[in-house]
Length: 78
Image (cartoon, rainbow, N blue to C red; front, side, top):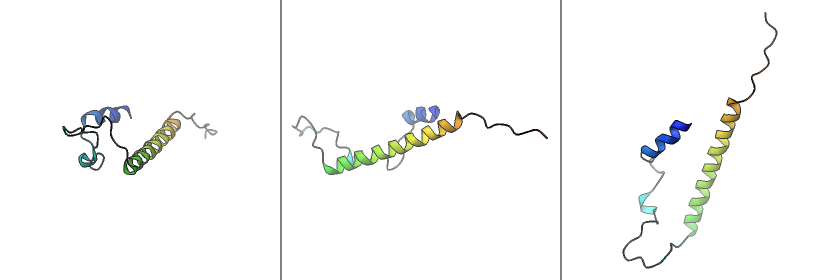
């Protein structure tokens, strides 16, 4: 898992992962507001990304638990 996390730093984001048109963090010269305005669309995006991260984390925990589970008892030999 660690290597895939490392490659995320160097590989471009998958298609649909980040939309440049919806990136509201880019400041323009005409912006005079100190902060950005949060809309319901922003909140929905945050909620969805949180749900995805939560699901991925749960799957990762299940995989780790399966990896480090004690070995099953060996039955009687033949």
